[in-house]
Length: 115
Image (cartoon, rainbow, N blue to C red; front, side, top):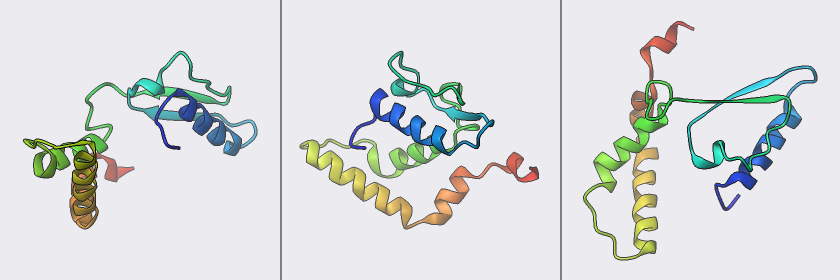
């Protein structure tokens, strides 16, 4: 999908719904991106959407990943163009994926290990 919007999310939910076992019901935890709760969103009857509280890194560890990228490679920058932004973000992402131990330490939750 080239865009993150209600149409793309509806298609994604339709695909998930197709794979939910007959008679079962899926609950999806979502952040509060605009397209996750839009009135235009089509939610299949075998799926319930459960929004996470805003800015809740304990429940949504990817928030910490974005913060780590901002702190290390993306903050305090002036970009010359849109392409410069994309190039710099790609550089930051590639630096992060070359450091899997950082991803693990950022996303690890000690309380989750007992389950």
